Image 1 (cartoon, rainbow, N blue to C red):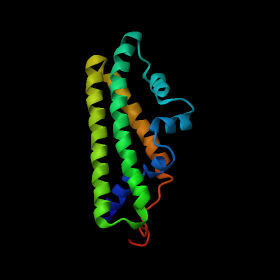
Image 2 (image 1 turned 90 degrees about the vertical axis):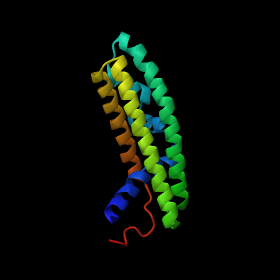
Image 3 (image 1 turned 45 degrees about the vertical axis):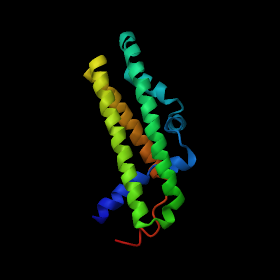
Amino acid sequence: MKKIFFLTVCMIFALASMAQSNTDESALLQGIYGIGKQQLISDHMKLTEAESTRFWKIYDEYEIARKEIGKKRAANVLDYADNYQNLSPERSTQLINASLEINAAYFKLLDKTFRKLSKEISPVQAARFYQIEFFLDGVIRVKMADEIPLIAGIHEKK
């Protein structure tokens, strides 16, 4: 149980450093790759002209919703960053639950977007989009995990 809690805390709070230094995930990707997220998507999707119009309409809807989820994620992480040294069991649980809800909303959005793209373009292109988004999200999480502060005393307990 302690290992599950620890892993959950690490995953959830891996976003803390981003919230402290850069609340825009797209800007973080720009800093890593030197180009914007939309350009990264465009470079890897390799859309035909016919696919492009339909794709970008769905992508724009996706990005609006994803940014709203990102704002909630950042607020939750900032709350953690402000309080991580003195987290009560109750506040820890609240932050974890909020993070789990945010992550669920993100994956629900990815699923919804995958299904739309599958119908409008093709399942293969939709899978490519999902793979790119999942990869970029992983890049962001790894970058942030490298800088996250741990809950006080976590290394003292085994």
